[in-house]
Amino acid sequence: MFSGIQPSGDLHLGNYLGAIKNWVDAQHDNDNIFCIVDLHAITLPQPPAELHRRIRDQAKIYVASGLDPKTTAIFVQSHVKEHAELAWLFNCVTPLGWANRMTQFKEKSAEVKGQSSVGLLAYPMLMAADILLYQTDGVPVGDDQRQHIELTRDIAQTFNHHYGEVFKVPEAWIRKEGARIMSLQDGAKKMSKSDPPGCVFLLDEPEVIATKVKRAVTDSGRDVRFDVERPGLLNLLTIYQLLSGSTRDQVEGHFEWQGYGAIKRELAELVV
Ligand code: AMP
Ligand code: TRP
Image (cartoon, rainbow, N blue to C red; front, side, top):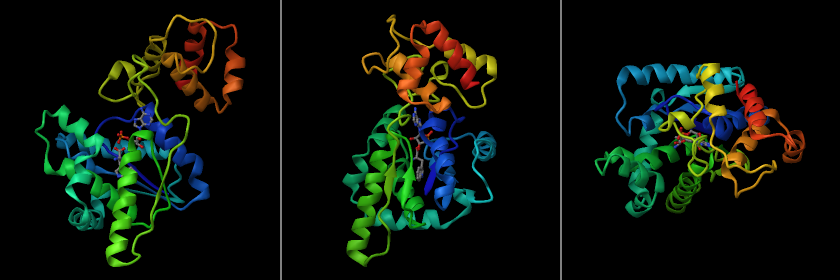
């Protein structure tokens, strides 16, 4: 099992529920490698001192979240030069059209108004190198990384076709629930560090977390159900379900006849 997170922002509940918690839950069934992908982070400009701090914080959070450093390799991507070397080989076998198709590239280059670096375009080939270097079976990630894993599989197959069976073709391990935690301010947008009021950071103070959860935007319905038509409530119930380790039926039963205020109060406590 291999996965990584960029030290490009402080980690939040979406990273935890979509990625880190799944790593922790599966760590005893696999050989694990979890990376702090700093070379990916610098595909967009990073203030050097901030980047140093975040790399260290991220390592601490990996361990504090329950990854056991005795059984799990945790390291910084740029410390292992082979990631960059293999990425170069993949740059040379990947058609430009495949890289241009990546939605994350399109979104991020739009954010910097087309002023993106060559590195931002080459990002997915570096990610393929991370994964394929270790003959990885599974890559536990959130839903937004599905396309990058598909590309990684295509690169592995293309390389193997030309040069013999060199790389194992990995699979994305994406959980059904929690793969897309939404913003607390807008149930249609994914939780992201670029939207602090809708985002619970793992290092937020308890009072800040409680305030963010209590101010979460929900509809004005009454009955408590996991309902895709009510994305704000669905998101809160999903977070509750994952953190409490219950089933959907149990959560609905637990909150039956309770108002949204009560749900938010209890959820705030659980998240803290
Ligand atoms: P990033 O912060 O984009 O480097 O993402 C690191 C990991 O967290 C990846 O596996 C993402 O898929 C996952 N992730 C990021 N945001 C969310 C979210 N809102 N919900 C679920 N997973 C997420
Ligand atoms: N692209 C991933 C993200 O933004 C981070 C990443 C880099 C990664 N290399 C990886 C994830 C290898 C899984 C495996 O979330």
